[in-house]
Length: 258
Image (tube, rainbow, N blue to C red):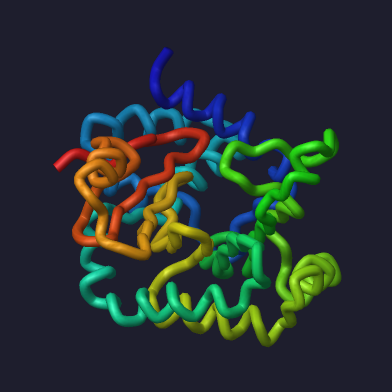
């Protein structure tokens, strides 16, 4: 099966449920956007993509256009941002835990309003709590192997919505708290953060994947460096910083080659 056919099948399965909500802005010239976006693909793939786009129905064209116009990043940009925004990133790491209640882990990501789609800003927030002995005995607790129990996991919440308000109130946050966190992320040129023994700070989405920093509380020893330098999703950078690439449902699952 050709790559483009497999990608389209996977795309339908991944986002078909949200298809009715995904609409391009009225002022977008789809053909011009496709012609511009396809230039970032390898030369050997362009002919196949162009053929599929021209021969496809409107829904196929929009799915294909959505895919190739997704944001892009790279390990190079990940490193450049750390060097340029190092002090802001380290400040984000130190300040964020002050907002999080004791024994809680909160993973939050801000997705900006799309410039080509009608989708507005969205916030994804996942709340976990450190397990205790009682939790281990309860059968209704979501079982995890990282010492955490999932309190709530919420994707794509709208700012100032009742649903979001209920979620953040559960950990004593307000809209002002969100604005402060968002401001720290913006200064660091990052999009997400998760506290814990290892702080994970998301730098940028790329396709369906994400580039991140994992910042440890101390310099890594040789054993830890080996563990977090596996040639795929982890790349040891220096001292207490590891670069991470998390692959999505489709697309690359490891860092790009040198």
